[in-house]
Amino acid sequence: MTEQFKKDVYTGLNTPNKRLPSKYFYDKKGDALFVEIMNLPEYYLTRAEMDIFENQTDDIIKALQISPDCYFELIELGAGDGSKTKKLLQMLHQQGFKFDYFPVDISQNALDNLEADLKTELPGVSVIKKQGDYFEILASLKEIKKLKVILFLGSNIGNMPDEVATQFIYDLGSNLHPGDKLLLGADLIKPASIVLPAYNDSKGVTAAFNYNLLARINRELEADFDITNFRHEPEYTEQDGIAKSFLVSQADQTVCIKSIGQSFDFKKGERIETEVSRKYNDEVIHKIISETDFKISYKLSDGKKYFANYILER
Ligand code: AVJ
Image 1 (cartoon, rainbow, N blue to C red):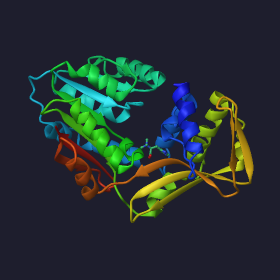
Image 2: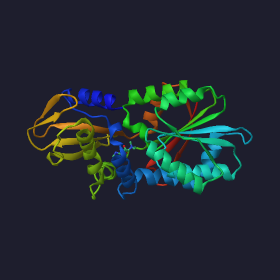
Image 3: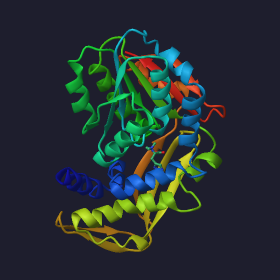
């Protein structure tokens, strides 16, 4: 883990347009900040998807077209705290469906909490937690010839540029069998007046989330980033539907990353790109899916049309 982290930081900071991969937001501190983000009034994404999972649970289940006598596997990639999934688990259980729930996450901490939670809230549901890399885990489950339903929620796909997202979904498909399903959560393109505050909340939680990336590099790679010398800056244009987050250097400064054995210069105003959060419409989703082995079979969205869950069939 640390070796890969070092490598990614090294590569990202040695390119002319400096960037750091957003996956490194999620250490223990980052996990906690992200939970806080999901509860912010400005962060509409979680509430919008929750609206779908709460009010259209039955439609989701119908659209998945699972036959009631078929024992299936429900696999969630990046399960986090599982708050939306619980609604689905509860309804599936109540309707007598037979399944194992496999929450997959890189954070062991998040998985342990989720398992403990489900044990008390939904004791009848079989939970098999899997910590690690999505594709290694899917490959290890490929041998099991049961129907699989994959959940990839929260618009986590939005952290990937379209070509990467296409490859990702294609690779998911190659670890599945015909008839398997993918439930994909996608934040929809909407005006900047709604999107920008979601990435620049008034309490500064999102800023703290962004700064934690530098703090983590300080902690884990023995660096000396002066975090007060960087400012959180989000950017979004409705026209292309892409939100980005940056850390902007507030001065000419040099930062030493000891475990990499290199210093990095930052000019005043120079930016480090830390995250891409793509927003979608049907056209973009159709284009991505058309280059994979999936077909779109259904779309659900919340009352405000902020968010969509697409049901794809392999
Ligand atoms: C978890 C990737 C969907 O991009 O909206 C929240 C992460 N970053 N606030 C997003 C995030 C800043 C989030 N995703």
